[in-house]
Length: 216
Image 1 (cartoon, helix red, strand yellow):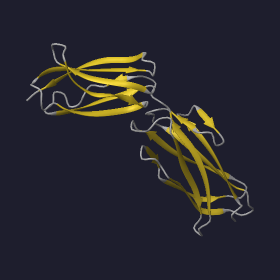
Image 2 (spheres, rainbow, N blue to C red):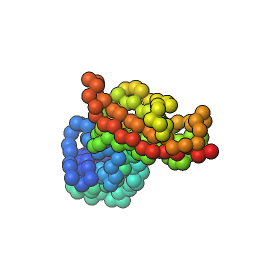
Image 3 (cartoon, one colour):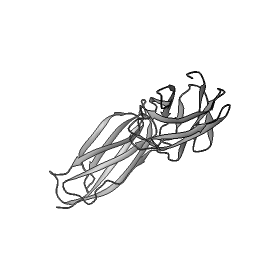
Image 4 (cartoon, rainbow, N blue to C red):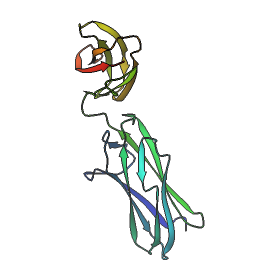
């Protein structure tokens, strides 16, 4: 019985790409409606009943739906496809390989597994989002995306153009980032947040400015 079921896997990304083998499957950053298709074939001369297909070692940033599926009967010399959909949330680390294990089990405890490797691609753009909340008192959160690894300088300016703080001045990896800022030591007023990203040679990659308000 252990040799009766072959386990093949096909990974489709937003219904446009099908991949085979153990090369990491590239998942678009922040994407939804991705599909994993598992083809389970019964090569034996007898039908197989009550198969459970489930995934394990699922990363926290990946929501697999459904968590598991049931195949009531898999007829001899036939195959069935189990489809799982998933989305990638903004906190997924990019360019980092993650392993997912899918298992086919029977009521008697027989089990077959297949491991795949996935990797989330970097965002397709740089972007500074509006801080939230805004207006705020006393703290707010800055969020931004990096298209590639960069040196990030995030500075706060008053309405006179004077820098009053620079909460970020460091190398950061591509992906989504957040930073909380406490304005407890500044007066109620309009302020500006400026972000700049440069490459390892100091070349400008991105810069942007957003307006915000501290309101006591």
